[in-house]
Image (cartoon, rainbow, N blue to C red; front, top):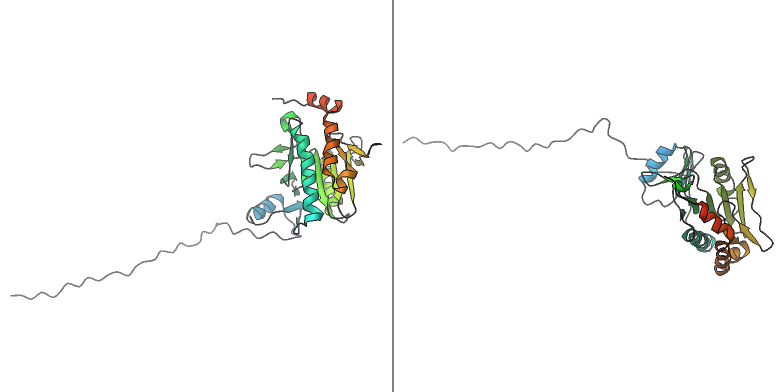
Length: 249
């Protein structure tokens, strides 16, 4: 009887397939750094790749990243301004208050104002919400909280907002205990200060009825701030403004 040798099955070695890197694969976005000079699309690309970053701005093509915000010098004043503007917006249809919203001003400037108030684009407002969810254009009123007069808010941003046609701009300088509010002059395109009346109230020209008791605000008396605002909301000028605010399609 023939003897058969055992059959030997040779196992082929496992093959590991390694994909070669695609020649056109996008590289990871570099991080934003203070002082970077970028286009707005590149600024947005890098900002989107840093979800841990809460606030960065592009001003005249230069990146500015804010330091941690102090409680008394920024957070508390900020909350008071937002409350004041939110109450006005709640009583004035087709207007909206926003807190730290990204605003695409132009190709070299993308900012996050501490607070803004704007009119719905359908009611004649200059800024509108883009399909990807950002505000583009010049909001009617921007308010910034600045630690001092050395801030960009009173220099580079001032010029950017003026050139872009932001109708009113206000800066609260916390250390100096002053609140400056300007309105755009249609004749020469410059910002002119809005002064207080004999009662110490500053009245917006763009938003009739938006009254501010500046002394009360600076001293931290929010109750009196809202009391003066309510008087503005009850005024004939605010009632007339509501009649003029209509949506057009």
